[in-house]
Image (cartoon, rainbow, N blue to C red):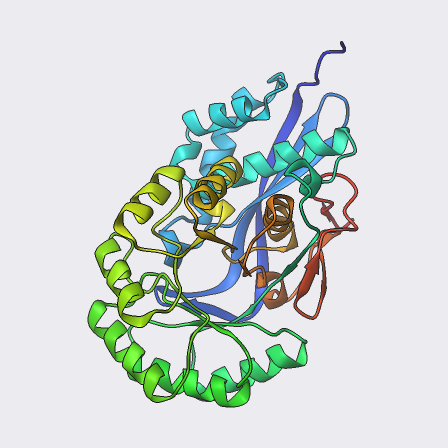
Length: 363
């Protein structure tokens, strides 16, 4: 049996992409995607690409932190021989610093898996199981005024996207959010609404939001992480008091977190994001959530088509994801890549990807 190649080079550089408009969540707004691009080349010439997408308002990670973690790995990564178990290489990265920066871990694992599957001519979605090739994604209405929310909803409908995700919570308060939600509902009365608090809604404000939604006869499809990440008792009460589906995002990054959610009765759905702890952790968390009877959602930070395609490959490969939030490439002013998933209305497809994740920088 021929020996596996080693990693010849490991290059890291900033990936800055302007946004069409600021992307606001309850913890703050981002004016551009301040990410990191990784290029990993094997000794047989195969190249793989990965992306780190830190989002300071989400979990405090920064581009500078991701760059530092990835650049510090270069001396030991270059020359490292691969084994049949790609996870062993990913584990080395985690143990040598990646555990402190989930987006850096994700970038390394994505580049490694891209090279791993390109060299064998395997699409990444098939590597993860090949269960499906399509997902239906939502599109997000970020923070802003009611008029801006209505305009964003009109744009989403014009794109042929059915499901709308709305950012709620933060300093503006529940009355402001209810006005925005009313404007969106009047504009898109048939659109399922996912209401995402990014852990920025207090229990008191949650009660106001629930009552206001009921008064307006707006029934959300999903309440995503309204309450602080450690308030599992509050999330359980929200489920019981509303009867609406509740998703955990900031509260879950690992299989151990799934066990805590189940014990507390705090969620119906788990939102997986590769930037939380990397690809392997997201895969294992999905398996644990499914085994526990929880529904699956795939999401992300402010990512280009590169990172979002890796997420799409994971979700379609495993199959059975009820919700998908893979829309941030639509918020970017430019696309510095070719390849990746295709999007028709809200239907995302990975079927055309023939090896790896299929994304490469434009030349």
